[in-house]
Image 1 (tube, helix red, strand yellow):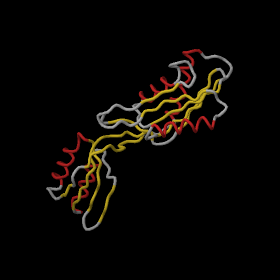
Image 2: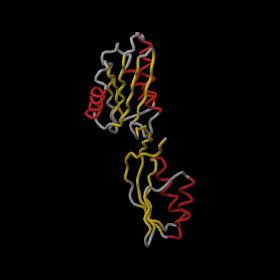
Image 3: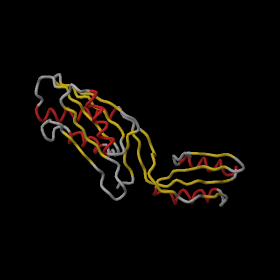
Image 4: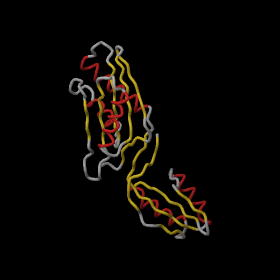
Amino acid sequence: MSNKYHVLLNESTGEFEDKKSRFLARMVPVTSEEEAYMILEQERKKYYDAKHHCSAFILTADPGKPAVMRASDDGEPQGTAGRPMLEVLQGADLQGVVVVVTRYFGGTLLGTGGLIRAYTAAAQDALRNAKLGVMTYGATFTLTTDYNSIGKIQYQLASRGLEPIASEYGAEVSMTLQVEEEEIDTIRALLVEITNGQVKLSDNSFDYFVQVSC
C-alpha cells in the first residue's frame, strides 16, 4: 500500500447529458461494501423510474493488502459503465469511495463509445465538485518545552509547512504534530537542536492522517 492516497472529504454530485440521455452521478465516502451498496440502493429508490444505476467503488486497503474494488454496468453493455467509472476513481488515486451514476434514456442509442464517454464524464463531474484529502502515513507526537523556545519552534515549523494539530499553554507549552514518515527523524532532531535539548518528545504513534485538502 502506498504511503499516500486520496480520500473524499465530502459527498458530491455531477451530471452529463448527451442526446437527451441524462447521467446523474453521486460520489460518497464509504468504509465498507455494505455502505457502498446502501448508497446504491438509495439512488435506486430516489430515481426509481430510471432503468440503469451503474456503480463503482474502491475501499481503503489494509497495509500490505490490495484494495477491494467493484464495478457494475447494471444492464448497460459490458464494460461501458462500471469499468470507466472505476478508472476515474483509480486515476484520482481515491480509496474509501463509491460513485453511482443513474441514467435516464433519451431515446437515442449512444453506442459503446458514447456510453463510455458519458459515464466517465458524469463521474469526472462529481469528482470536480468534490473536496479531496491526501492521506499520508507518518507519526503523531507531542513536544513539550518552555516559553523561551516556542518562538524558534514556531518559526522552524512554519518554514517547513508544519502546523500543530493541537496546542496547550500552561506552565510549559505542548504541541502535537503530525509528520510524514520520511521526515520524522529530521524534525525530531531539529527540535532538539534549536532548543538546545530543552524539549521533551513523546513516542511516535504511526498511522495515516489527512495531510492536505484540495
